[in-house]
Image (cartoon, rainbow, N blue to C red):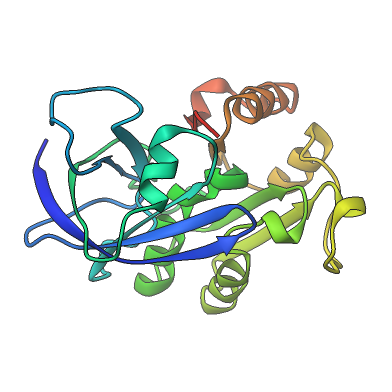
Length: 241
């Protein structure tokens, strides 16, 4: 796995309690949509595995883009506080890319992407790449959040849907009682009935689930209840949120 030193070029809030961090893209760096990197903060040895010094992040940017972006919920961890405190221009180390949370090469097979909260990040790279390359694969994204304020990249996803006729966004907000924004879309949880609706007429779709541990486990159970073979389901769990 390759190691690179890069500089922080920007950071911005992308949803309530959620930040995106922009870094230089190293010369020769190449990744597949859906892959990840380890980010190591300055002043820490490469060999340490402590969660206070390094963290794994899915890459938000598509391979064609000229920067690397990661995004995270800002919790109470030592790492998150240190990351947020980095001045623009700080040099950090990244290791990667790595991971196999990538779409199948067979573009005739529909991929159903299921994301909860910050679990959207690996799908952003996939969906940006699909829109830029106008790939032939049909993509359906079920994206669940409590309310719109919480939903990272929601406006961009709506724009990507307009750009790519083979991409369908199905976003749902499950706690609108506590929202300060309006929402005229779905408000239901992602349950087996909804899954069955989504897959009706699809020929052997592949499923990808990404989010916090409880959501991933619940979605795997829901897919099983919906009659989906577990061999057709891949998942990526986000810890520490």
